[in-house]
Image (tube, rainbow, N blue to C red):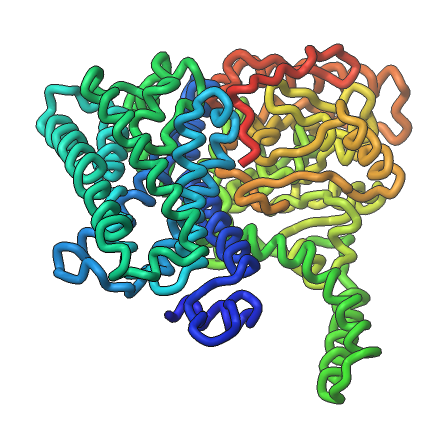
Length: 639
């Protein structure tokens, strides 16, 4: 088969050698296809979460119910994809008169093996309290691996995969329940009738009769079914026949299905086991979504391919560009071919030039207001990806200069970038103070400077604060690296009480101090906070090295691709400083700093309801005692 040829091309050891064993996979080959197909289902789950669930459910007011509902629906969707795919394969072969055709058998076996493995990983906690579910899934896993190991049994796959037909009907029935379809609906009655009929006919009659006919009655005519490699499959098939009759007896007593709980999920014969004991108390999907328009907007904004591409490119420049240097050095020394060494030399020269190429940071990069397609395109990608909104307490004036202090930092202050992009459309060209390391990485330094980033250096910031309109807004993130380790998903904590340097800069330059709070900044990534020993150690090292060593991940487990969560920038009332104070006293700094802190708390408490999940949150400062982080086992899902 094509799959066997591909595996042999990857590694000859994946296929058993010797005469007559062309289509027999080795244990290494089975392990390889199991890992690959399992990883496929994990990626599929992440894609389903991004495209259909995460962007919609994260906008509900009841975050815990949304998280639990998302996990349950993900399991349902994966089961639906698997069962419908296998059922389609089986029905096409059987109804087309090719019920014994081996074509595509290995592919569907690997596909089903990956789903079974992933369902065991996802619902591993339910193996111990639901033995019927555990026995069924383990038997299915043994059957798949044994069929892949055996020779000449691929013709049985359309018949064996017919067991997925009732499960496809059951998956449709479960999704109808989650969408709130009542039992009086015609779709409900059709799905229920198809499920009960196909379950009783296929699992109760067809499969047992076929196994008896081929394995027992006409055993001499089918010697391939009696080879040692197929023995585990036969034991698994007999085990599943016993389970099928057990579930048929359960169905005869309780034939009206309900949302899965305990043994009733096992009685359905699939991995749709209960994710939580309170699943019956959760709302349905349509109850969590306000209306269809909101769902469509959430999906289109969260699954913006251009926005995803932007963050992937950003990640590549942030991580891959520095990794090219040691790779080029290694190729220069160890490459056996002359042209490889020449290429490595050219790469090193290019990186060196891009690293030392002079850039002026004491003057604006762009002289005039921008209305270019490239800037507008990137800005629209950012704002649409986060469903970004801004709230101004007072409009900004063109004849005033501002030092905008953005809180909190988060892993990356994307809210600052979105707000700056929005300001560009109104005639402003703000500068953004960033970590010096950003302007030392080749290629990334050119992109950052093109975007208006200046180094977070006192002299450079003072110079930027003197620029007139349209460059009269300068962004700074006072929390810095330390604030990155204050992130927790359950509370908001900022690091600003002891940070007064930015206030001193505003007084010395005589510019207005503009409080900006980014609602949703701390929800864009999953990261280590300082409450763990590793997070505390990384925080200390980061502050000493003056570069971030934060361990975090976002969408698809990637470190710089954030979750598509909503962002709202709250722009408070400017703290007016009408006259420059060359040498401000501690009392003057403390007075302006107290006004800044009070304004930050005020705008947070006033507008926190704009982001779902923030209604009951309280803003903590670094000197305030925060409650211990509560862990809900029902909400933990490492997959």
